[in-house]
Length: 472
Ligand code: SAH
Ligand code: SF4
Ligand code: F3S
Image (cartoon, rainbow, N blue to C red; front, side):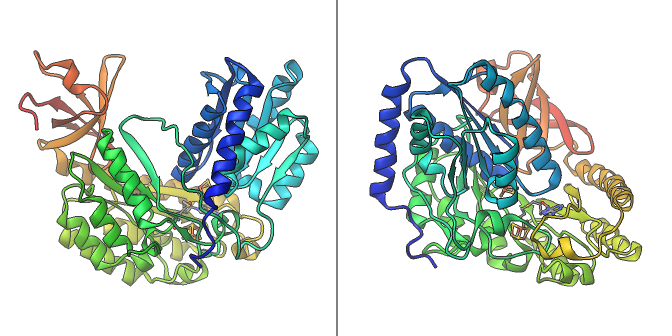
């Protein structure tokens, strides 16, 4: 499966050459606006789109109205995400009416779905380009074609998603932050959880080579990046020439002060070895995101998650044993088809028993083409009522758990100061606001700097404190 997944180097070179051609076609002073929906993978993709656009001579626009190239990088995970993107895309009509030379594009996961593509072509005639999740690297060519007058260019891999997918190395990235970075280690998903659209829109799993991933991380560390997140839909099935725990261990081995994170680890494949690697390195953040989805075995089976509540609990217990202080977070879907009151209560019990620092709770949203969309649906108001009950429980559990930080000194990565308030993030991925004691040099608290903060206030999900004079 790993053979033939890489975009040939010559093709990347060809695209970069077209980017330079576009630069001479568009002239000076043109701007690009990328609007990103969805997960961190999409954010990482948008940074590559910006990298390519910058090679083409576009600088980043402050607002959509200033841009001559507008790209909507969309998400399809829930209907709400799609509707949001479609409604914002509707606003492009006015922009196009005002200036026909503005180029508009829709890409990302929603663009991978044939029914959405049809809808865009029919109802959004002012969208010039549609391209798929594995066609990002062809942006220069698609933009050039649009400049030369091509209407409704559609660039999708086509064919079966089993053969779908290419990994493009060597595409420049224009990162949003100078100290936090996303590093995709793999693309796609093979798990086919019955509710989820990702395997259909992102194709099969494809891993980057470990040498490429490690070289990227080393480069980031050397240029001062402090918070690096390895990305994959299920990082545990990373299939470069190393296992994921080994890759993580190596990634934590560079000289420098930085924190490594990863997302997402599927409980069925989260091994003890992974937890042991986390416990062995202070450079790996003490935060484990382990999506449970449901606390009921019948529902888990219907979801095709391939673990039981008992197995999940066993993994969570091992994390607690090895990393007693680590933050554990999770995702839960409320109102999966056929979920009974009793089954939902099992989820509440499981959530209460594990104790999550943060829970991402979602109302189940049927995704066309997935098995769960054809199952017996439960009423919307039941789903939202369950969501509210789960949120209430989680607010209580999270506040209880957050109290463990009171009075402690935590290493915090500063996000700088806005309106007189400093904010930052701890290794546990908690947002913390903090004050500087008198005489504390502001320079040492600016964004991208690590500092010690003593916690003197604890809210349900956030913390507050005061920076300590004695720095690390
Ligand atoms: N690969 C990750 C999940 C990515 S999607 C993993 O396996 O954990 C992020 C979350 O969105 C999922 O964990 C799930 O809780 C939620 N989700 C996915 N499909 C959904 C749907 N159809 N309706 C509601 N929530 C959904
Ligand atoms: Fe979706 Fe499941 Fe894959 Fe996560 S593991 S992306 S929930 S199919
Ligand atoms: Fe959305 Fe695609 Fe991510 S569907 S959650 S942007 S992988």
